[in-house]
Image (cartoon, rainbow, N blue to C red; front, side):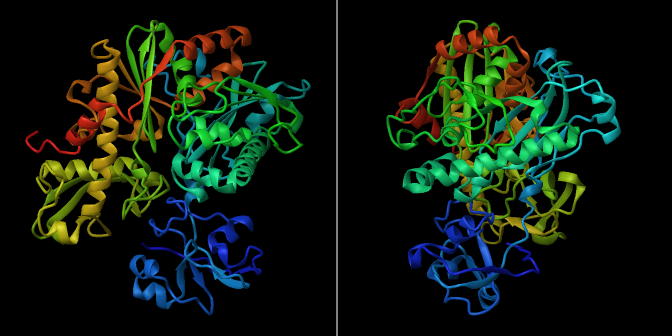
Length: 559
């Protein structure tokens, strides 16, 4: 890993937890963000710090994950170090605050009813927004002045989508029903692990309150950014509507996650929740009424319910909604009801557990095309690539990872078992003219992730029994950038999906926005109808899923 360290030195005082507490936990308690996708298990090697002096002796795990040059320069893993005394550190320069976050839903093709997507304001541009705990301007201060003028206080409401990796928020003028600002943030709970299972475990082992306060701080900061961008007083924000997966909603509400961590996976509460910002422990600067939309099961949460609501799937005949992240949530059905499920894909589609994987930050490769060339580094030339913000490639994010495997299949570099030919098995497949290499263990991570999603789709559709869906709706930032052909080539999606996929943006946030603007009584009735007519399909012990999972580990190299 190519890691840059801050020039400034962080002076960490002596710990109070004794040597039983890791340096990672001391940093988190001191208010520092630690990149630890594995949740401190010592497997990802990303929680690097550099000791300015007197670095402790490296552990066996550090010898495995760190180069000799790194170890000799004082680099250690925060999850491995256990020193109670004060220490001087240089922390990595993180770009996760710049993760590309989708805060829009595309209604151009009619996938989402137009009334759920605002017309915007003069000069507003749709797309992704960058930011960390602050709002990125979607319009100028002059535009804000034109909107608000001097006509007195306006009623405003905010919608927030709490994702496992990122948060997205929008601010609405409830009188004119227009969106006036948007903001995004890293979910700083990532310090406790990249996926929901890691955070469930952390909560159950005593970190529940820290996780709750972390997400509350993120929401506070998002709201602060929204009102600053819009140029309005804090008390103009009267309502807050929140969506998220079941784990995120449990952590926010301070509910026990004990039932989410083991079979039969029983949530504490899935119902629509109404309360105040004070009850959620938000900052007392916000006098807001809060609604958290309802979920369906332990692993199909309010984010999917919000998507069904925004897309009006409950008024369609036969549709399939997919939201692929660390957990692939799926809903099949329509006016006659829904069958829902989820498949644990792991963090691979968000750049996790990949040797050259990165989050969706500037420089992350989102797409690539390769060709064989004996004269190129490693015999492979990158003939086309795109990166977020057009910056120099620093690694592969989720869609770039899909393309890397798809190109390896197309060029015949890997066999049906997913095994690289030599020399790529030993040396890895060069990407971006050798800036980094995609390795055999990376292919295995993709195989496991894509097999889980594909087997989940096939099992869900077979059990639903409605035939091929008339609409295939792909939600989320990953879905909006992926190449349809590559997803079919690697077997993530079946051949019959070709030409029928609609990428619909952040449908979870669209649902929260719609609830914010819709007649409240009618909205509650519809949400109750959706959740009441949804049945969960458990994949864990399903014989068809387990059989398909093994089959879908393979690649169709004859395609």
